[in-house]
Length: 309
Ligand code: HEM
Image (cartoon, rainbow, N blue to C red; front, top):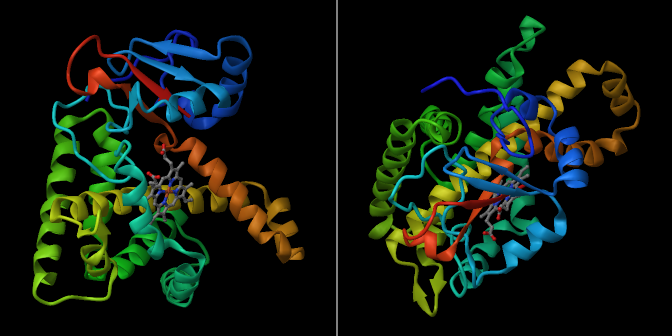
């Protein structure tokens, strides 16, 4: 993996992997929005970065000209598409696919997993409380979503380290390292194939089992669609939440006065969580995604993506 060149000019050379973006993206976005609302870069095989809501919305809804099929912004794009429905689906598939996943994501189904999530968090805290300190990201944050999602999917909780490895290979190293991306995606796909195969004759009531029973156009989802959706749940559900939780803790550790305010007024907790997740995500590279002009997804024309924050 080569060293990244520092950004020379955010208007013509933007890079969301630059340390300045990672440390504090807000002033960069604010200046671009005001003075250069659609920035460009020669990196990522050429990409535009619209920063105003109206432009982002116009592109996201213009499904006639732009496709959602490639999501992750990469230094070099691989020829193979790795579908992860519904996020990589265009109309007419996107809506029915999303609809068939909704029953697993209602507030009521989330409430059902709350007690187990509390147990997971308490167990992790028990692991370091006697030391009086810990590396919160390593010892706490990154294990929570992995264990919760492993439980929802119905896979072996002992596979948590594997899931962490794949997310790191795909979303952290994989953005600029093709081998790492392909290795993570391939291993994860094989893993889900095996999980689906196990359930073919022994249906389960976990999320994998439910997705195998989900219907699309009146037919059960074919295995490839189930596996693609599992890839998405793994990536969308883990990287986002560990960034959000990590950011909240990091902020509270740096600003003890905010920590005290939260202790004094516990009703502020939902607001603090919302804000923390939002800011944590803004620093994570996963907040940025591409829309490719439709003809380019098919491999023709110049390779210029539209990337939105
Ligand atoms: C703090 C936590 C989270 C944040 C901030 C977040 C954020 C987002 C964002 C911004 C998108 C839209 C991406 C785009 O279209 O460009 C998205 C899509 C999605 N997320 Fe999350 N997410 C979080 C947690 C989760 C979890 C826990 C799951 C499931 C286990 C999940 C599943 C999905 C799915 C399935 C989509 C695709 C929806 C579609 O294509 O219409 N997310 N998320």
